[in-house]
Length: 333
Image 1 (cartoon, rainbow, N blue to C red):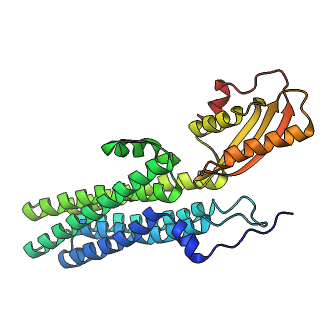
Image 2: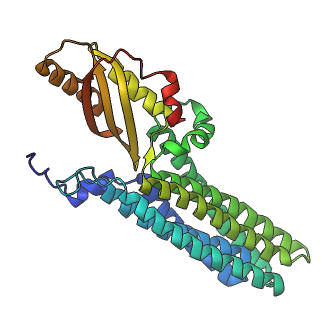
Image 3: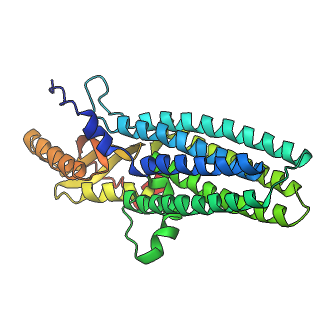
């Protein structure tokens, strides 16, 4: 029986936690405080909605950071496949928080349409200052999350190429990074909408726009909740790896000189890591000792990939039928 792995210290686990969520937690706490002052001073519903969104973001990222720390724990005898799916549970808690905040935001928006708030000129500048601060901080966090997505997806980019690449490869990033990306994308959009509402309502008689924008921000929050909730529900059930990951794993296996084919291959994603279960075919006439050597070689090659944490290899003689073809990758498409 394998010995129990050495226990990691709390500090070691914290260092492995998702940096994007930790930065977002701190940044959004300051943003929520700044916008809360503006909302209390002016009575602006759009500012209230934006403040609620930032507060929800901060609380969520706190949950997510704790989850990312726990998910980095090494496998144990009791939990041999590790703790990768723990982060999905924490992200689902974050979804509940966002949903509650979205409901409160929409309700406040409807109230403001019926009873528009009056703002003073001094409150106007407080709101603008808070929203500019919001855009600066959330914009920086969003850019950081975009860079993390390309890093986790192992995508090489140049200059500002990481921005479109982040949208394309967001599905391959870790759950906490995806949550930061989606939430801050909405946060930046919400801050821009809130700024438009503050400017227009202070210069025109169209006070109901404040409530309309508040409801719109609430619906954006609902969109984030559904998107993140779906991603993490799929993660909890267990989802197949993306097609390009399957291609990479297959090439590593077939690069061994004694491997002739792949009879079956299953790659499951847990958090941002992958578990590989493969049945490979080797040339005929090999001894049991040779088969063991092949299994160990292939396992070592696969486990050297930092995104692969668990590999199970079975072996059979070549059956004379080509099982692994480009069409076999359709299940990963």
